[in-house]
Amino acid sequence: MNYDSLTGLINAKGFLNALEKFLIRAKANHQLGAVVVINPISFKSINEAFGIEVGNRMFKLIAERIKNILFKYDILAKLESDRFGIILKDLKHEEDILFAVSKILSELTKPYKIDSNEIYLSFNIGLALYPRDATDANGLLHKAEVALADAKNKGENAIGFFKQNFANKAAKMIKLRSDLELAIKNSEFIDYYQPYVDSNKHIIGAEALIRWKRGKKIIPPMEFIPYLEHSNKIIDVEDSFLEKVLKFINKLKSDKVEPVPISVNLSTKSLSQRDLTQKVLSKMDFYNIYPLYLKLEIIERAFMENPDHLRNLVQTFKDKGISFSVDDFGTGYSSLSYLATLPVDYVKIDISFVRNIASKATESVVKSIIFLTKELRIKTIAEGVETDEQFEILKNMGCDYFQGYKFYKPMPQKEFESLLKNRQP
Ligand code: C2E
Ligand code: CA
Ligand code: CA
Image (cartoon, rainbow, N blue to C red; front, side, top):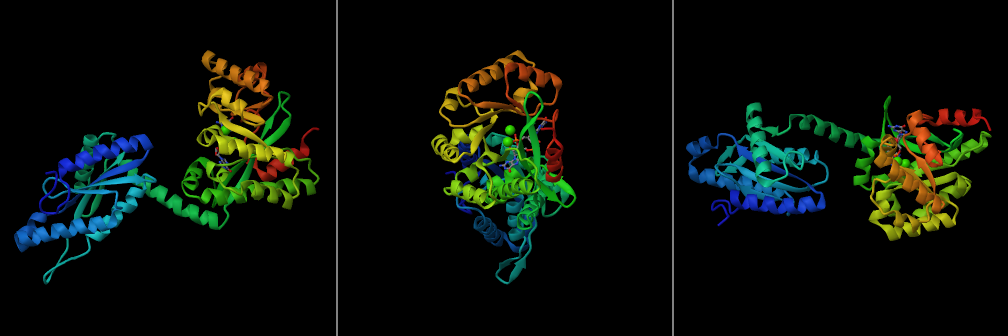
């Protein structure tokens, strides 16, 4: 009884039920989703001009065209009056909704051949995103209706959004993604380096940080790494980034500059490659790099997702003389006792602790991290040290190394090389 008799699709009531079910799963699995409401414009005049029977056939054709575009698990319903409702499940990125909806719109606006007639139709589409616009079924449907009203104001074949700035942002994201594909092809990624120092402010090592050189602009990793991580492209990008870093360490030697250990960040995708150890070792061999000059950084959360695999991986690298740091430590809520089981050499205290180091609660957390790591013979590096006060407090707590704008900002390879060249021994 939750079905529409004409199209055989579920009706408004069935739609809300299905939406509720989807939301339960989406919440548990952190999925993105969207509710789309589609409304043919002036359908009444079709009924008047060609008769109800033609109108009904057109309705079925519209439903079929939409269905052909959707994935099997998406849901199409016939809502009240002449509206269709769609639940798009499992969008990878929010802006994917634009691809989906423009595809639907371009299919629906193609002519409908009925008997000897070619009939053209216009539409309005409203959409709302889960969880951006609402998190419950009624709320989402309501916001999609509000967005539909917005589309109607814009005119024929317009797409309406609940949040106006979303459309611009989404269009920018889509452009970024296609530029990113080109960036990979043209190798537009470059290496910056940020030194870290000991309590006497002597440079002990540096972290290699990736940048995207897009024309004259230098784009920070937070704006593109998440996209690469969604696809498997991050693996190739990190692979060639590592190569760049090793080539640089090799260049330092031929320029007669004493190198320091360089840390490279690895994403969980890269860490899951079966042949990672082999790949890294053969590159090191090729560029003739001592293991002590390369360190690898993994975020704490990665360890929690796949503890056994990573423990073995870290051990394998350690046996070859390459050490690991646990990055962003304190943000992943892993237990300190888990740390004891990991053969890592460094823990990087997350920037959020350093920022709040003057507060009592944060101070005691950081103190216990430093206490425990000392027991385990793990060195601590504080990230994002910006002020004298932060430096003093952390130094007094016994933190080993310090990285942050107070000492050095990330800098291009050339600048870093001349810094190393001119430093006091
Ligand atoms: P991260 O590994 O935590 O790197 C440290 C980030 O903190 C860097 O940002 C650095 O510029 C910034 N930072 C350093 N000192 C300070 C400070 O005193 N104040 C403030 N506010 N920030 C400071 P960046 O270079 O933008 O990198 C951001 C993140 O991008 C990195 O965070 C890392 O997770 C990721 N990333 C960078 N390169 C790679 C890479 O090759 N692979 C992967 N998977 N991720 C990378
Ligand atoms: Ca890092
Ligand atoms: Ca970090």
